[in-house]
Image (tube, rainbow, N blue to C red; front, side):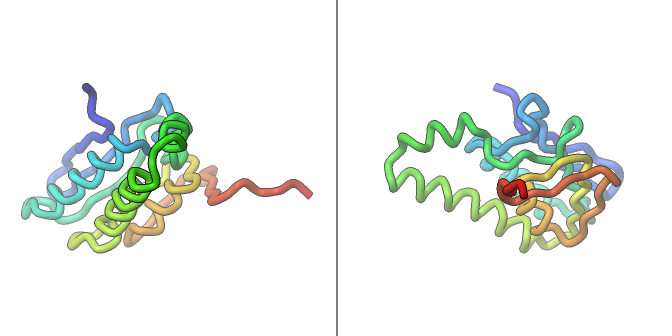
Length: 139
């Protein structure tokens, strides 16, 4: 099994990279668990002074993985609630982390990807980054 996140260190800076470039760094249950665990690990590491969150490839995060959403459509109400609570724990962990966080937005951030950016202390984006929380209607 491959990891959905990668931690690269530059001195006291930890680069936390969402590494699911093939699906535009979209969330699934594995990514949520691994990203939450990585954030908690880095928060407890005294050598780390700041965390930079980014996505592999040309996308920061496309939000929820459609295949994961299809699987969850057939899950029970309890399973869906537990799944939602795990996503909420990820966002809460990032928001209340004890170290400064920077979202390095290297491309598109959609849905939950925008949520990750919003939970960071600071955000820096490339000039052609795009942000979208829901499908917009054409006029």
